[in-house]
Amino acid sequence: MPVSPITIAIDGPSGSGKSSVSKAVARELGLAYLDTGAMYRALAWWALHREIDLADQNAVAEAARALPLALSTDPARASVSVDGTDVTEAIRETRISSSVSAVATNLDVRAELRRRQRELIDRAREEQGGVVAEGRDITTVVAPDAEHRILVTASEEARLARRSLDVHGAAGAEHLAATRDQVLRRDRDDATVSAFFEPADGVVGIDTSDLTFEESVQAVLDVVRGARGQHPSPDTRPTLQPEETS
Ligand SMILES: Nc1ncnc2c1ncn2[C@@H]1O[C@H](COP(=O)(O)OP(=O)(O)OP(=O)(O)O)[C@@H](O)[C@H]1O
Ligand SMILES: Nc1ccn([C@H]2C[C@H](O)[C@@H](COP(=O)(O)O)O2)c(=O)n1
Image (cartoon, rainbow, N blue to C red; front, side, top):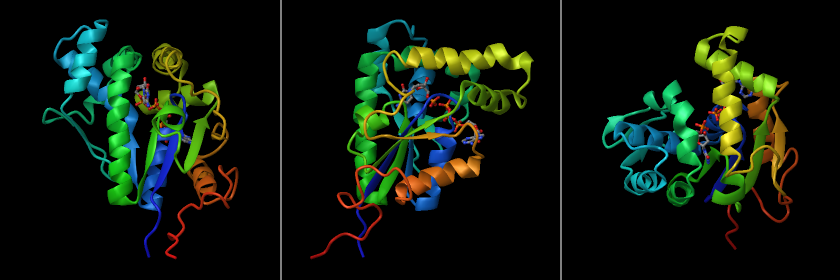
């Protein structure tokens, strides 16, 4: 029996857990996974690779429009290539995390990447039954009509500890300065063009500060399956239900 396509839009600040949770939710529900942050990172990598000055707004916007990007939406196999070069690992390096906001705050870049993101979402809905798309502006701008819209948050302390553990393998004070730059300074810059600290109207907020990773995944699944905080109300918008055939 055909099932209605579904978009689950998830936003949140750095280190809130939105990427890892989104990927796990996509796997659990058999949906595609769209990491929109990877698109901004791939563009930052490409611009640096071509020695484009990131402060040159027009040159970076031109690079965005020409970006030869291939992005897997398989939650089991993340991969990102630019012009045939696999940059899956390279886009996670500190030099990219430190410079990506310069690219992501360029409004012409955002227009181009949002256009591509909507295309990828549409394709995933047609071909894969739906998608979990995550970033900073998915619930508000890229997919405001998504069947489910969720903002994943966590305290500053939890986000710093998680990022430090990810990048340095420890959450000690010696890594604090580098981690603060990657989390707090980056969020401050990114927040000049997107609102991702508070849930917009109709967006369900999930605070993961005191949750385990598995509990965070379950909290999102509960929203999607209607166990809590569903929007719009279940009677106006069925989720993961067989399509009406009559
Ligand atoms: N309760 C939790 N919920 C979600 N993630 C958690 C939790 N506890 C620890 N983590 C870990 O926090 C780390 C950061 O998560 P993730 O990379 O998904 O964050 P993010 O919000 O996508 O950050 P960024 O935007 O900087 O990429 C991951 O290693 C994840 O496993
Ligand atoms: N929809 C999005 C997704 C990401 N960004 C910016 C914010 C980050 O600095 C950068 C990389 O994202 P991350 O991989 O850390 O989630 O891209 C954005 O502005 N909008």
